[in-house]
Image (cartoon, rainbow, N blue to C red):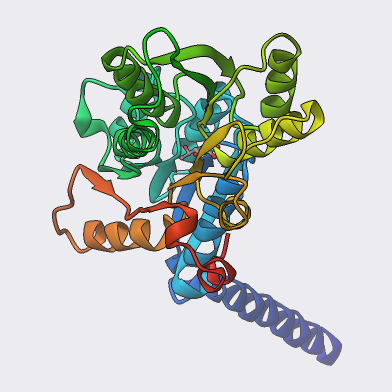
Length: 335
Ligand code: GYE
């Protein structure tokens, strides 16, 4: 009798212990858990094709930290749009709070953006743009004014070469192009082509595909130089292709930069390119600012506070030549 009483007591205490354990377990997933309060951002990044892109990724990672209340889920698309579309679909399934896309190319976004819209997940388009009819499918497009960048490059070239060439003896331009269909490629190309149309003393001798990478920039320029070395200007749509082209010129024994045969125009103005510019190896650096993180965060804060935000937001940028650069400025550059 006594033994059975003791047995009952110990059973009861075991039962109570389980209850206490269970209730303490459920506490760890209670709304007080800080993990639960993180604002989850699914970010589909283009890839890691350039120094610009690495700086852009860093800026996002440094901005959207757990300490500031964010969880940044970044997917690297390795420059393939289909990888981006798959990533966005995963973000929708995971029901993230917001999606950021740096689109590889402009076309082909209607379907997946409609899916995000129907799931009630807001989307920010960053860096490049998308070409879609229904602009309600994204909150805002934040990035560079790429046409302005191209126009600034062209205006500089006009001034630099004024009166030196003619229709019979034109300015020979070698044009290195970035990823076809990317806004940065389309608009930098457009600025040059429009200017070329307007100048009978300019001639684009070739448009070579460099896909925004150093390896391609080197490869296509080397190959071109095998059959044609009559170049006055290289208009290169990003720094990494420029670095590749410079290596090809070095190997072919062709001089460039100040006092050289070939003038070099480059886009991005990363630290390394600015240093070449100050050292007289590159003539013009058109800045493309990759530090989008803080600007995107500002827009997200406005959105969360229910404030209106502009459909297009441009980031601040400048152009650099040897004349307006200093070593101090370059040393302070973070990318
Ligand atoms: O110029 C290039 C990068 O879209 C602005 O992409 C970006 C471009 C940038 O790979 O270096």
